[in-house]
Each structure stands twice: as structure tokens, then as C-alpha cells.
Amino acid sequence: MFRSTAIATLCLLSLSVSGQDTLSYAEQLKALEEEMDSLSIFNLIDSLFSMESQSSSELNIRLSYTTNVTSAGRDYNISQSGVSPGISYYHKSGLYGDLAGFWNSGIEPSYNPTILSLGYLGNFKNKKWSYTLDGEKWFYNPKDSSDNPLSYSVGGSMSYDFKLGFASVDYSFLFGNETAHRIITNLTGTIRLGKWWVFKSISLYPSASMMAGNGDITQLRITRQQVSEERANRIERLTTFANLTEQQKQYLEFLIKRAHRNDRITLQTRIQLLNDLRTSSDLSEADQTALQQIVNEGYDVEELVDSNEFGILNYTFTIPLSLSTNRLNIFLSYTYSIPVQLPGEEFIEIDPIGYFGASISYRIPFK
Figure (cartoon, rainbow, N blue to C red):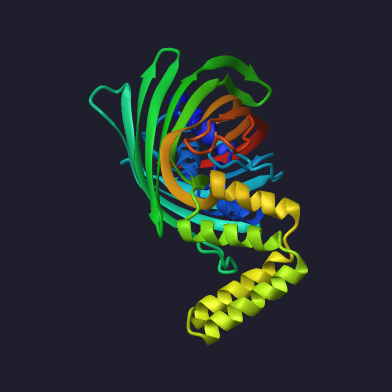
């Protein structure tokens, strides 16, 4: 059952999560905490398929560690490590249940969330093809005061075994206050290295995967607008007033007040003209030049525009080493992730990430 062990290694050792990409430091930590990319199902598959066959039921206890925590291949330049304990039960009928917890050094509270998974693993008539169907519920730490947007996940995967490895595709729909989609395609090979010491099987499972999905993008949109005729007239008036001498300004103030007393202008016009006259005294030559430039060329308007984009999120390459006894499994892995910018993320700096991981699991089979 090398196929399924390798599936697990792709995500078990990375503790991947997903989230927004244009966030403040605090928001980045929140995103890393709250949007899990169906990680628990990969942990579960690692536990279930590490056995030699599916002919018996099994209880599996595991603990995994990663030197970095990423979100859709991004780490937001935040240094953090993660630990995930878990326990799963597989029934020989194909039904399974899993309970996993997650501890992250870069968030508060550090332990968050706990994920409960239920699902089914089966084969088609052609035994080279297999599939999984699963659902998840995420229970957040009561001390977490943030508005967690995702609380549930449903999905499925399909895999094809061949002589040198396997290929698979996994789809997950995440929902709650918000929704998200994730598609992961994967190609994994197997290299058996034989036996050593107490380990009856030592293998390498080099793999490459691609994640596609949607993400919330906040863009700074800048548009050039022309000054209205009313504002252009006022700017022209201000620059004209600014070039008057002090004596001329005093005389103009007298004329404005007399025009109002004679009902030639309204009170509102009187107030505006006198205000502009006083404001013009504070205008430097540079201010006058800038105002005139606005009249001639217009001005920039900045606004934040939210959008939800779908595309390739990252490419991941993993080299995991598996050491197994009859009941004990140890995984050591190095993962190199290459994030891909979604439309609208061009101004965000995202760099490739490399990190190590380790996992140990113990299986208790039942007849």
C-alpha cells in the first residue's frame, strides 16, 4: 500500500493552511490559524494506509512536527513551527474517523483548532483505482476571539496506482462564514531501499504536487479623475487671491461684505469668498503650482478593492523517507514549495520555501 503512505507524506509534514494574501502581520497569523487545507484527511490517510492491507480494522496514534507552517505555499515571512497530535480509527468496511489537533508557535492561542473527520475509502472494480469521500468539522479554541471564516470541509479524492508509484487528484470545499475551493494534483514515485536494523521496510517517496484554489485578494486601485468645473473655479480663485497684496486683500474683503449688504451675493457666497480669501494667505508658490497642476492634469483616487480569484497557488516537491516496523512508522521529509501569484497579487512578494518535517505513528490492528 505504498500509494497511500506517500499521499500522507505530501501534506502531513507541511501542516499546510490557506488564507488571504494581502494582510497585516496580525491578520497573517490569523489566516495561518483558521483556514486549514484539509490537512487532517492527509494525516488520516497516512495512518490508515501504513498497514500492509485493508483486510482488518485498525487504531492509529500519531504525532507530527514541521519546522515551518505555510498557507497555500506562503509563510508570510513569519517564522513558526507546528505540532499535530492525532488518533484515527479505520474499519475494514472502509469507514473511518479521525481526531487531530494543531499547535502553532506563531499564533495565540497556540493550540487551535481541533478537527474531526469522518469518511469512506474504497476501490473501484479495477483495483488500481481507489477513492475517498470525507467531511470535516473544525472546533476552534474557546480563547480564540477572532471571526473564523471556515468551519467545515467536504471533499473527495481519486488515485491511480501504477508500477513505479501513483497519481491522485483531491478536491475540497471549505465553508462557514466564507467559502473556499482547493484542488491538489499529485504524482508520487516509490523507491524501496530494503531493510535496516529493526525496520522491515525503508522507502523513499519522491513526489510533486500542484495546488489550485481561490483566495481573497485586496488590491489598491488608483484612478485618475478630472477636477469638476466648480472646484477648478475655486482653485483658480484661490491662486488669484494668493497673488494679491495685503492692501488689495483688505479692499477685496470690504467689497465682498458690501456686496452681501446690498443683496448682490448670498450669505453662503459671502462666507465662501471670505474663507477663500483668508485661506489664500497660507498658500506658498509650491502650493499654487500643485493646485494648478491638479486643474490641468487631474488627481489620483485610491481605493481598496476586494476580489476572489481562482488559480494555481503553489507547486510542491517533497522527498520523504519512510521507516516501518510491523506497527511503528517514522517519516522524515524535506519539502520545497514554490508559491504562485494569483491575479492581483503581483505587488506581493512571495518566495519559495523549504522546510523539514517528521512524523511518528503507531498502529493497533484488530481482527
